[in-house]
Length: 452
Ligand SMILES: Cc1cc2nc3c(=O)[nH]c(=O)nc-3n(C[C@H](O)[C@H](O)[C@H](O)COP(=O)(O)OP(=O)(O)OC[C@H]3O[C@@H](n4cnc5c(N)ncnc54)[C@H](O)[C@@H]3O)c2cc1C
Image (cartoon, rainbow, N blue to C red; front, side, top):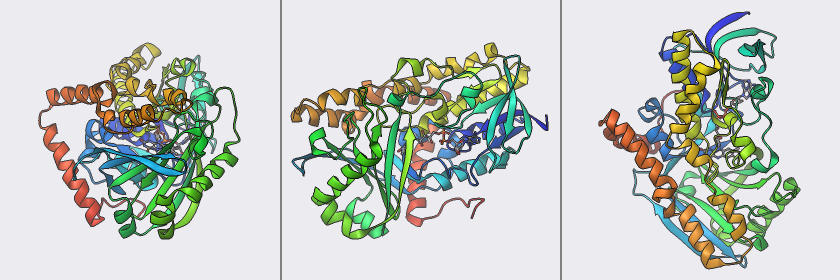
């Protein structure tokens, strides 16, 4: 080995830095490797992190000043029929400074997370790809980097996201099946802050439609056209699963066509948005959103001898909304706890690391959110042309129904109960977070980044 570490964490996206910080805080010799030059650069341009990630995830994020782009207080759901918005659901909103989530650009946010790991003593190597694992009699002993270095670990935490191959090379997992993967096309538009404030305020917007409108996913499946709103930009996004009902659509062609249909017909776009935006770039990315819904993917291992797999690499993206950051944070926290224990006991065998799987199962959110069939089931409804059911389902899924006990209400109450039992003062930290994050956003003032 060229160097030995207690823990090597692969990937400085959303989950990796959290696991690395925890391990470094516990005094373990920790290395965080990231293939891109700057953490977060290769994740996706931006996203909306739902509030349950902040409330129930790592306390240092809640108590810190990470760079957010816009507090999101409401979700506006518009249903399109015959080329016109025929119904708008505004039921999901909360009064400011409370939010349902925060939009963020990934590069600064993940850099902020990685800075916290480095501050705690983790070593960060950017522009370094883990190209292979080092195996010894079926046990993972470290990684080989693209520079040819052999780096040893007692525990390897794979947080390399969707497209990385480490867990496949370790013989633990297989490629995600195309039915599980949604391919996204994103349009990055510049828009003056005053215009985003006027047109969207602190909301994000979804457009839902039956297949014949040709603005949703080409082959149905409950994918909608979304507008994420940032400080001075908006990103509409449209997704299509690689394979739907055995068909493989030409997503590259169809998603463009569908977006053109949207921009060519919908007055909300033509009047309120188009005159105020300038296209900056068009991007592609993939999410294994339905990994938890398909048995063969859900059943794949998330740990092995000397290795733990977290976040997207483990198939933990939530199936109902495609949000994966909260589960990346929750699983990073669990993995770090298990890794610290294993290193301290000198046993990182598969049997010792099984605690990771048990704790993931016991987590209020991970299994619940990756096995939520609401969006998957929408494809049936999309063929019925039953608009009253459609309205009801939209409200139940993307509207106020999101908080129902059987949806996100139950897991949130469970997590709240757990946390308040351990530390009742956590309620004060939640309230402080809302007001501090809001002030930070108004003043456009966040912690300095190592890249500033
Ligand atoms: C279009 C799109 C929209 C999304 N919208 C949302 C949303 O609104 N809300 C939400 O919560 N989630 C959203 N997600 C999902 C979210 O991005 C992921 O769930 C989340 O980033 C997962 O975190 P992670 O740490 O597991 O992986 P990632 O954040 O993807 O991090 C993986 C990191 O590992 C690095 N890496 C990969 N392989 C290697 C290697 N071999 N060696 C070294 N480094 C490596 C990558 O460069 C990357 O930095 C979206 C995803 C996409 C694609």
